[in-house]
Image 1 (cartoon, one colour):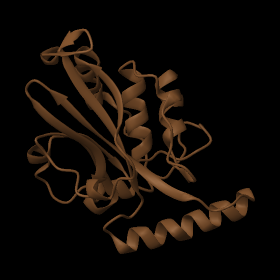
Image 2 (spheres, rainbow, N blue to C red):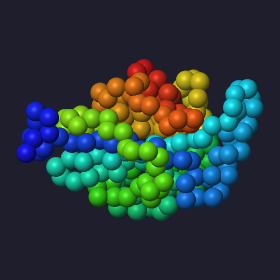
Image 3 (cartoon, helix red, strand yellow):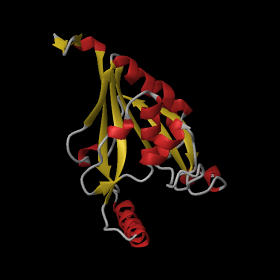
Image 4 (cartoon, rainbow, N blue to C red):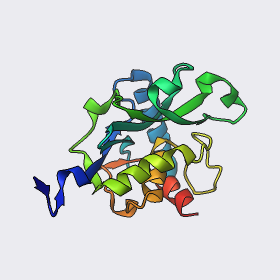
Length: 196
């Protein structure tokens, strides 16, 4: 059976999900609402919804879940952790509660995936590109979450990780649409750093 002009075995969907900030976690949602209210006031614009991104990569050897999360424990190898970085300040990042992890988890789960808006965005079907996304993830810059250490004009976030990996793997990230009336802080920062 074929998919376009290629056999199904030669395709490897990489799909992007937009998940509302704080879906399933009340404190994160409230903090996000406060952050967006302040940002909108300072920038003199209407408030919008804030989203974070995650990926799934289906390749012949399994389906991989890709996202940035807090570090819950020291068993990162069980969750496919490929990188870790500090939250807030590098000094605070010595403590686990002030660290994030980047997962590329075979047959893993993205807990808030059920809250994703709309259909997933298929960013590629190319098996070589799908493998490249996985291959570049361990070398993602582990910049401080919430800071703009690279002077891109916005803070480094989970969205930065995803856009960086896609851009480095050869996926055209400029054409990826955000949800209507929403924004994804850090998305442009990841592309900017990937291009540098």
